[in-house]
Length: 93
Image 1 (cartoon, rainbow, N blue to C red):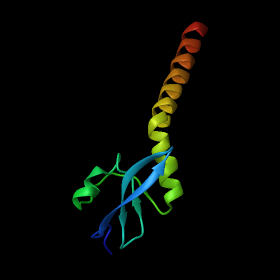
Image 2: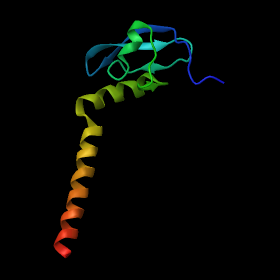
Image 3: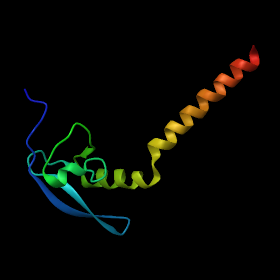
Image 4: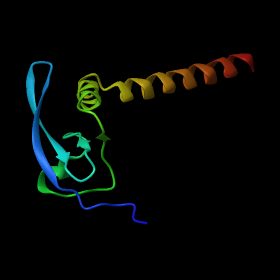
């Protein structure tokens, strides 16, 4: 069993917040690739990292999340929480 496949990327245009964005769509697996996470798809490639979606709607929501950088905020909040816990532990000593 192989963990990789040979994609047949085609370019599709989706509307994200009123702007047209070119995305890759694999005709083999029927997956959409995020053009920001997996830019290699435009050249026909496949890499170890990337974000792939079965539905166009999920891809659009993911692209919107890039603008908000939600994963960066979550990391920042987790870091703040850890720092607060460390400060509380220091105050108790």
